Length: 243
Image 1: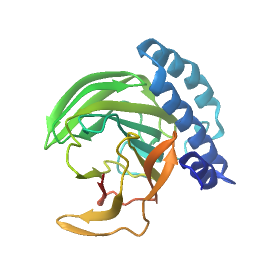
Image 2 (image 1 turned 90 degrees about the vertical axis):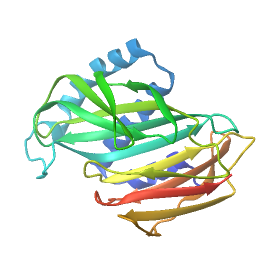
Image 3 (image 1 turned 90 degrees about the horizontal axis):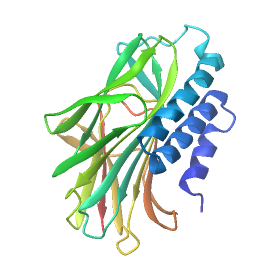
Image 4 (image 1 turned 120 degrees about the vertical axis):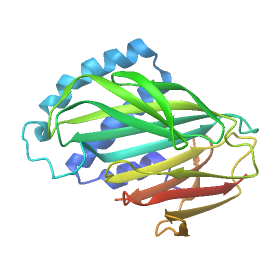
């Protein structure tokens, strides 16, 4: 069976831009899993000159956008660490393109109970506030990102007491255009998922999604993987599971 990373390779095969995107996304995800603040800072310092030399960063022909940023590729991962669902980790790896010169941007995550331990690989989290049920972090990148330039970042947070029921769900919303999203939920070995459903939410209406999530083996344990090309900014993606 094709695992999650092999699916990424299938998506980017034959597409040089997407290949670079996935490469940096996977590197960033691996770094975020094991590195402390010093390693994160050092890695960003090391990768930024390389990023500036990539062919797409030498021109200024970025696509038009009403926002400051868009995402070429995003990998969202939920790690459920125990069978009670009390300890979980949210990690979002994104490869951005800037449509205006900027030094700051926002990341947000929702939590059923409490979110804490907010970390960014690039720059510094200046402040995190709660707005309409979301924990919104203001991130200062530390240096200016020019129009047309790409950069990768990993944003993560601890989700405490958020997945304690037999029937749970995760809703992923979008604050900027996203070219490709992969959503993964990783379960503890002692409590794998049994049933899943993937839906699109528009306002108060829910409908089945065009693409379905799958239960596969990742990291020697059961995971849910949902692969979505070009999700619409006004829609939310809702993943439900019984475990």
